[in-house]
Length: 615
Image (cartoon, rainbow, N blue to C red):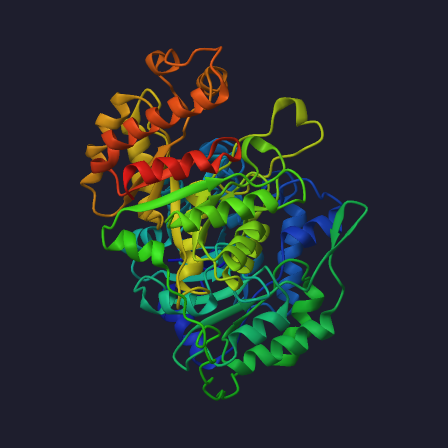
């Protein structure tokens, strides 16, 4: 379950624990401070230095910032510790403990003899290093380490801020409450203007989860957007008994000579925050781009005193966008009924001529194929966009489609945009893949993105299924390569994908009897459906190339040697079909369908195999 903007601790002499802050919030609006990172950069010119390190080498500036926010009217300040963890800062735990301890000491000095809460701020800990997922147990252990440092310093309020999903938060908030049940925990999320986190959780889901978690005392939203979007997205959602915190950015920034600059808009910000208070928010502050001037104006507008009574008319449910066009996902339905399915992969063109692939898609439909799949620029070479081409095929050829969605070329925004566009075009099946890397020779001109990997992409689609696509969820597929030395490890990765929402898997082309004999070990798992990959070989040269130059494909010498380098095209094709038929017969009882990869647009080879199989 997500958490707000950090840990809030009170100066022990004045405020002790949950009862005190609840008593304060019962009769008062709690004004918190504004941004630390962007304001520190603004007044020091240090834009490329983590502000947390200033706790040790520039404590006077951090102390000054805290003083300015209190003078502006803040009744709660957060420790300068948002990114203080050994993973995100790539530092030793000993150094991180020094940074956190110094941050707490600075804040406590500033509030001495003042009736001001001290909030210990905890931000999300990165769960990827480079492109690799970190072990969740390592992340949880790091959260516990950070929490324990604050607990040792008698911090009594925790704010976890700027989170995008609920991962880790239920466990770490429970850990805190088990240590000291009097601690007050606030959880905050960063959202987009549309009301979703970067991991596609909607505001409605966030609120539901926060209310249902016994370890969360207050929930809220910070960062991501300015006050107007938060106001629009929160209308009608706050209940009278909710403790809600709102700390927006000052607005949208612009880049000036490489620096992120926010609009200086204290009056506008304060007026919007007054409106947000009217929705029922009890804790008001600021995030990126806000300054003591913003907090001063906000405190004046909201009087930082007794909350106005508030009410908001209940929001009528929006009519369903899909109410008039429910789609039948025949492919998904067949798999659920354990009926055998046929999928065929077609190559998108390198140019703007779709004639061949459209014709091949129509042939597939006439041959009884259930669905065609469209690769997403395989081998890092640009082809026609898989989602757009899949939409055209579905519309004009009348056959279901599975566009491959790879992470190499798109960040999260672009991936979400593609999924939304495909959904509008009635695409209800996708294959989530990490994507082949860019060739070394192209890396000087072409940059990989890899904002996500396949596991994270599956999580993204699953999350969108719960919110955006809830009426007709997208059926998620994953890739499975059993041709490596340790297929058991690939099975474990497959199960991780299944846990995140994938329900069917397409294997790499299978040629080896050892792999075929391994397949029944998967088939007993009721949670996944396996489509065995079959790629007809077309020549000796083709077999040698695939075996030696394409990662993930392994062809036994016994199969390669069936081809004669001098074979005519027709004879080689005929042999390729016979080999594919033999493989299909061997594996058909161990899979839920076949996934045919069409070689060189020769869809006639696939149709001959299907006809010979009697399917």
